[in-house]
Image (tube, rainbow, N blue to C red; front, side):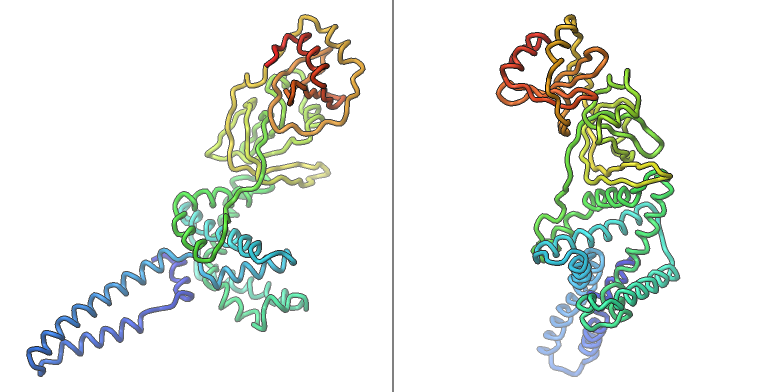
Length: 396
């Protein structure tokens, strides 16, 4: 039995006293040798039944301790935190968000355990003291009165957080490990959480699903985010620079600064063991979060991901023009507008007078064009048909 299971017994309850009473009853029945035969036979039957009951209790206790990692009392703790952070939401929202936080913590514990991370009693006690101090600070604000519901901070920690201390302690050490693993990546905690959740769902999904059903938690693990297509511009030891929308050939004639200026979605993502990438890879990734941080006056944008697929580099067709001057004249007086993000790779790419132009097929025969330094324009089906003729693009 591991340490977190022992802590969870404090919530689920100890059955030692119940088993002791059953044991004494069995012993008493066995020592009674003055009853008639019919009572002796009945005693044997009862003894076998009670012995079986003891076995069930013993096995049941071990099963409880090794399968119940979630409990309503601790879920209530996370609901209170969620309500305090995001007021005026509905009940379903609070329960689902609370479960996500709870599952993230449980996942971090078991993932840390799988990596050989351990902790001591002193570290648990330190974690407890830290939480008591945090609760005391929280209580000082009158607006947090509803959070405690009349319970003192130390008592709150005992009731709601004591079984969670091994998990919090393990997660703290897991984060420290990932800080060393991703020294130049700001969101290293997010990387640890993503890999922990993946590990947990692969190994303990059945237990988690059972708890969700018991508490009417709907779709708690739905993944938000968006799929992006682009090219890996640079790879460091623990992160890679991803630029949405560009094709690998763009690197032949543009500097990194020019690329970042054109494509605002130039973010650093972590290199994950399950999704290795190389510089120049044309990929689609599922981005779950993006943000930015300023370091020494330089804003560095980053993102988190949970899936990467390497695409064939010829998904975008490179057009080699034989009539470049004619195409340039056609595009000369176009009313270019500010470009929006395109969530898929361009269908065609070409250079006109040394400037990259990318083309996407639209509905009804229309075309979308993006030109570096100029912006974007949508061509109606009529104008698009003429450009297609100049470029040698066959109508589909």
